Amino acid sequence: MATAKNGDKVSVHYRGTLDDGTEFDNSHNRNEPLQFTLGSGNMIAGFDQAVTGMQISETKSVILTPSEAYGEVVQERIVPFPKTAFPDNMELSAGSMVQGADQNTGQPIVATIKDVNEDNVMVDFNHPLAGKNLNFEIELLSVEN
Image (cartoon, rainbow, N blue to C red; front, side, top):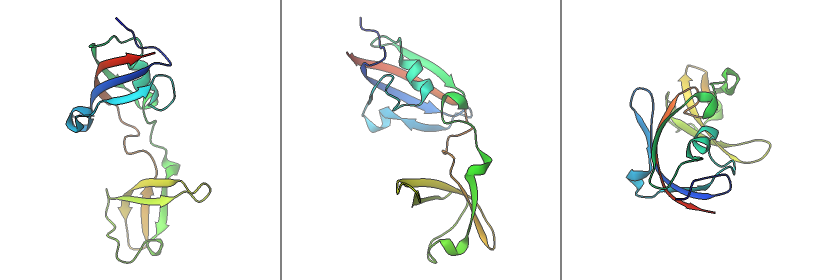
């Protein structure tokens, strides 16, 4: 039976939850397995490592620490913006997602509003799952060399 190794194209089903049981992603709900090449850098490091060495039909449960996933929350990535930087008709509330573009590269950026006060909006550019343990149940469906 094939064992997944770096360079293989793999297909997996997975369910991701936080420590409190909140589900943040589930490929079963989309009825579409995740396909990626092991070791290509397209996945978070811990997920890649968890799939490496699995055999087809094997199911594995892993807990990834922030260092294996999206990193710790970096306070310098929580930045105040004047309210005037946002459109007048935009509803600004904590927890809302905002989109923009990187000033240097033009790449799209998604961030989360952390707080809104009279003059400023605190925008968090950390990944929404930064600083959290991620619990995955992974099932390896296929391996192609």
